[in-house]
Length: 141
Image 1: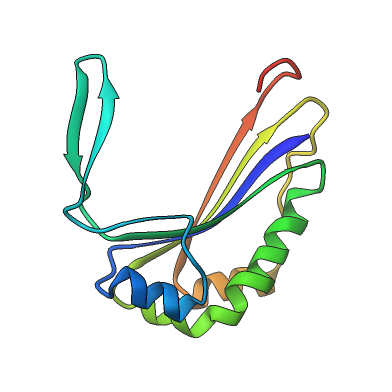
Image 2: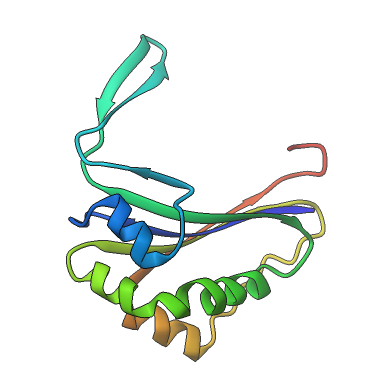
């Protein structure tokens, strides 16, 4: 089975997280506000940092052998297309990214195909595309 993550990531926007969530009709799987603090573990101990911008993300996770492109197409059609106006509005003062992350196992089919309709849609909403692919042997998790 392959681990697949597909997300829409919105950042650098100025509307409140609650208003954005309401407009999207989705609860984010991760969000933060500019100037919020967070902690990370380093070799020097725990360090506090501050977020530089507002961030809102909606992510779906899959553990499947299904072709990743079918899942991406479904995400675009079912999650993004109905929210086109909100995404276009948000991209006027923010950044949008469609993220696809895949941890492939042995005998995977690591291919993608974005049809003209999907590419046109991503261009219309001014979204960047980030694809991360990792190849793992069957013994790694």
